[in-house]
Length: 329
Image (cartoon, rainbow, N blue to C red; front, side, top):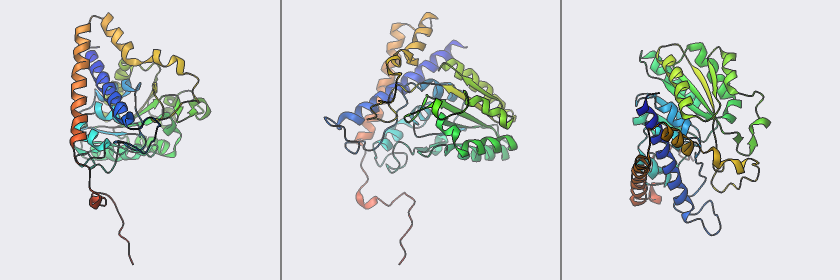
């Protein structure tokens, strides 16, 4: 791989992790000493993606601002990698008026039309939406593509199979990316999925399918490169599954008592692993690593400050900018 691309993949992974660590800090800051999920500046559930950075960085490196991306309820890494406005996204997470959805949607409902990005808390919901965008791209005669990210649990939903079938039938320019982090909330993959790899399910719909087994950002980048090039060339959809890693709980506050693999999780962290690889290749040194982390921290803290300094919507505005059905007498 090109050396500059390898360093940029690392840089993106560091930015994502730095952001997630900052959100983790702010989320828990005022929920102590007893954890209260409804308290604080960021109330409600919070699903963070530490460990899954290689998937977002590797795939989105092949996408432009005109390409469309849909993500699941754990969306921050994908949003950042696809260029969603970081200040507005952070403000949305904090429920502020300057947020992507004016503070009404929260972290599981991020919509950025400028980046063609959306996500949803409904499992597999982004797959049909990606089909619609891919269909529009195809009808307009463009080479734009749509990418739908989802967890391995979503591959057992009807929307997954319906979407693969229709994408193959109409030869749509869409790439399906499954993030297999081994756990559907607290259910192990082995107890929920009948096949060892969701990549094999592509064959049922006559589309290429493959599995990246080791959470390698370079492996993801190469697989995504093939899939995106195929879609742009009008050759139809592809399916990629990445065996990735959930470093933290399903949601913040999750005690993870169901996990028997926690002792080995820190050693599988993809960022120090890739950092070592690039250092051995002569592409990184301590000074450059420090600068990358410093730049990421400055950008992230700027977004956090922007969110905190932004106004909270007033109670009188609660029904503004949302879908609501008026009561009829």
